[in-house]
Length: 470
Ligand SMILES: [Zn+2]
Image 1 (cartoon, protein in one colour):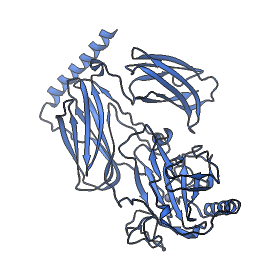
Image 2: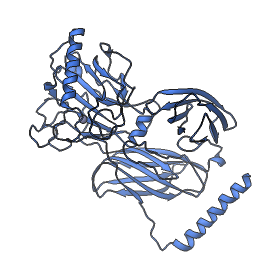
Image 3: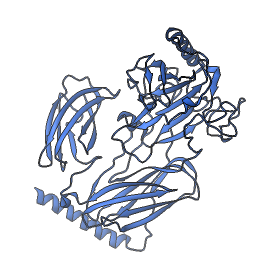
Image 4: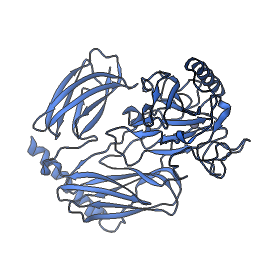
């Protein structure tokens, strides 16, 4: 059996090599970049305001009731004790190089025009917060609880809601899953649009420290995709709106509320990955498929992906494949011709023929993002690390039982969990991998029909598969 497979693969390689040499030869210039462009950030606009007037009334009423009950301050001014840290964090185990884009600031223009704190136009008419979108693969990140909303400053939870639908793509009247924290000086921060059932178990009246988990970034309420709307009030009235960003056109806040204010634009590589097949991003509300791989055939091809923030026309991105000994196997550049808030580019390259652990290294404006990948894992005796290699789940769609089978896995103990699409864990079990192979059947007869995410996790490996129960 194994001989047949190897022979088949070798035969295909020979045919491909022959075809390339004779048909394309050297006469056709290699295509340096095959695809990419705008990677749309999820953000709202004037037609889809993050918070409706009715919702502001509702929050104010909630807060007023709690203020009276908790005997908290009702009027405050900023003090340095409320200097904010960044309100989002990558969850433990998630390690993209960066993960966010700022898609809207506070609109400082009182008329129908728009103007952000820096006198630019990164806002929409009437916007009252900072929209921080997560890129790339926002729904994939939401499904995997990759990006946490955390307290920007210490304070008391003064309002919260959870249980609302979180895969919205357009204007609607549903309330978001949210938290309001009142700081020691009476100022308040609204954290809006969180994932359903992700909001902290802490109750109204309990305190949070800077960096404490508040929830997971989602798309609840009036929202066009997973992002966090972060809004500041000087006191408990929505009329006391403040803009935390210090800048020439900030008429609402004066000095910065940030402990370390981020620059207006932050060009960076958010993520790089190496694929056998294309990544898929179908758009809201469908979960994207990064389709990242870690093992490739010797001398085969792979697609090299990069995802950027604040790309500007005229910029150059430097890409390299680095050999196991640190020398460069191949280098090329991406030359920007258009400016984007979020963008992605990919190109196919022929891989080295020598088995080994290689590095895809991307440098852009002083930021570096790298990804390890392997050529000929079998020869190296190495397991697949993550992504779409490793395990299969069948049958899928499934009936009352699924079987999980894998080869080339790292030996050790794995936890297995099955989550529904609102993020609740519905089944857990464990699996011991020996001789790099595994097989296990899981009873799912008690689960309702629907889509589930199966996660298989060890210290070094995390594999996620979609399972449909009929
Ligand atoms: Zn917003």
